[in-house]
Amino acid sequence: MSKILSLTFCFGIGLGAIMLSRPATPRFTIWTASSLDRVGRWTAPPDVQATSTLSAAKGEYTSFQVVMKAHERGLEITNVTSSDLIESTGRTIPAQNVSLFREHYVYVNRSSPDWNGTNRPLGPDWYPDALIPFVDPNTGAKPRNAMYHAVPVHIATGENQPIWVDVFVPYQAVAGHYTGHLSVITNEGTASVPMSLTVWNFAMPHQPSLRSSFAFWTAGTKPAVEELMRNRVMPQKLAFVVCKDVTCPELAGLERDLAQKYGLANTDTGMWSGADRKNCTMRPAPSVQDFQKLSSNHLPGVYLFNYTADEIESCPSLIPKMKLWARNMHAAGIKNLVAMVPDPALYHESPNSQRSAVDIWGVLPRGYDLARSRIREVQKQGSEVWSYNAVVQDAYSPKWQIDFAPINYRIQVGFLSQSLGLTGVLYWRIDNWSADPWNQVNNSGTFSSNNYPGEGMLVYPGQQVGVTGVVASMRLKQLRDGVQDYDYIQKLKQMGRGDWALSQSRAVAADWSHWTQHNEKLLDIRRRLGEEIDHLSSPQQLTSLAVPSPKHH
Picture 1: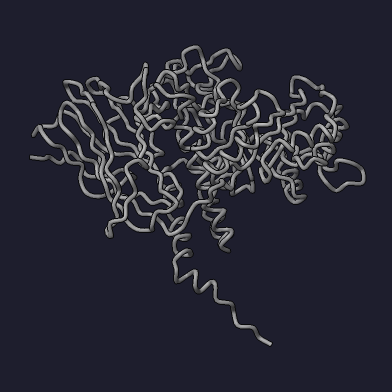
Picture 2: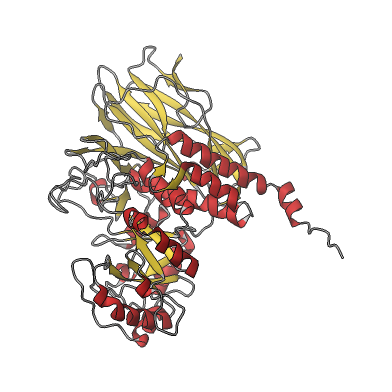
């Protein structure tokens, strides 16, 4: 006989009860958690499990977690499989659209800096972060020659093992209510975890609305780039993937492939000036012809920018050189990105020009708050403002270290970016690995005497888990969900509901100091946004919107 282990679900997928086949007295506990929960290695199951249903647009990823806790004799998980998701009329989302990952715990041995403000690190502990895939996304087969396996895996007595579940809704899916189940196969029996998914009547844009630039330093192969783009963020310099140089005849072909598969939105042309906060010198400006040659290598229509300099607020002597760099790249149709607080001395690239020398200002949260009036000035002028994140520079804004709550990663790129009118996000590095990245995520003494666990490390090397390229962290998945949040609000702007959507966004993330740390509130607002788009996308509503208003003469 089957035995009910627990009622479903905790912000997950509601269809009834998790069922266990043999034995009558279960030797493990199983429950579900939302994509914004982080389940500790010894966390107790929740006392009360709220019911909810996964909802997603066509072309969207939606996620949840299944957690097993071993009882007195430990537990061996031998496999986890997914059924198809089937709608009442027989339409199907194939099981291949459900991706499974075993969450790998890493140990933070020393807390990130704690400034005793409104956003504090959680401190030393074991944290799930790396994701070990059940299936190699490059081949569709089981990973080979792995050091760490998704399954089989042994869970010690009293410990938890979460499984991350990604569901991708195909663009051709029909709106409706789909159901299916996961089978968790163990040496103590098989648990059936029901899945319930509502597919809304609209589609996500193939190309993300939020621009982004995330830098590989050493691991930027084509499979690694594809893993990054599957998670809706863009690699910084694609030219270095195929030929390790900024000039590359093969580049347009790579960009065409990535644009078709993953919605390539933008790329960096790669002419670094050498100027940063430690070096107030710049290389001579490339000529217009040099920039034109760079531009011609790229796929037409790809948004091109050049990340030229970094944090040069204390380098006023560079203003004339920066303007020359800007004039030459502008003549080739390339935008100029500089990570710095807006400087009025750069608002005009030449005395007779109304164009700013900087098209994209990259600012830290602290820099934004120190220069709010200038931020508004450059936005009114038509320049873009992107945010970025590094170490722990204040006591209040979202952080991307492992020992901060998961909502930090999601809320910056999505709701905060929309609330503040930011159009992009950049990150200095994603493959900043130790000699043993699967076990050592700490870096005390690298950036300062402090520890910043996971800094510059949003992916893990794939070799240890039998995958070519890299595999995602949970933090990268949560950043992906933030990019999708941004798309929802952008879609509502396009549908004439921008003011309402921004009011919803500001209810959870008004500015860098005022943003919710309650998962339920963010998920509730996200549901409201989706329901509104779904309503506006219904055939009846679209028909009424398409009928022109009568003209009065």
